[in-house]
Length: 216
Image (cartoon, rainbow, N blue to C red; front, side):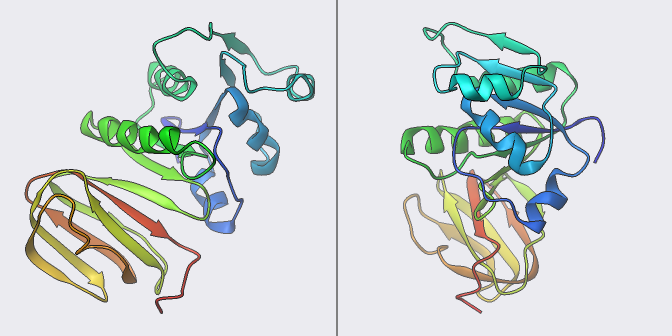
């Protein structure tokens, strides 16, 4: 990793794994509000802590007194995560790992993270969303290669109708397949190693479970 790779700590669940540790290695870290609770688990001190701090207990603030904080009012137009991403981009971010972006009690937040991640990818950023147990990678027209463990489950969720979708390196390969919007045709595939996806038109998310070998 380089100085342009950032990890954004978000408020969803985060399970520390060897794979996640390798992904986070060398990244700079910014925490969004209650996402700061993950700093201890990943063994990193963020360079910045932003948000309205409505989901941050006093004990967490007391535990990290030396991390610079940028407070924002609760009545704002962006989520704390979006503010943290903006701060990373101001610092030159080209790769973003949104840690704690998936799962949790707030499905609206998790879904918004997916949409925001896709938008960030459209602006040219390299984006990974993760909970440690699940990962999401935006898919845009062109070729995307995702390094997944052999035997792990993954799905491609179309956020548009997809055309010319090809999937190589998977148990159920596709060649220039058309996927109607809302179709379940690309759920529950199995990686045979690195998976290469080629997309003609449309937008999608690859959702993977790198620790789940039930399809092996």
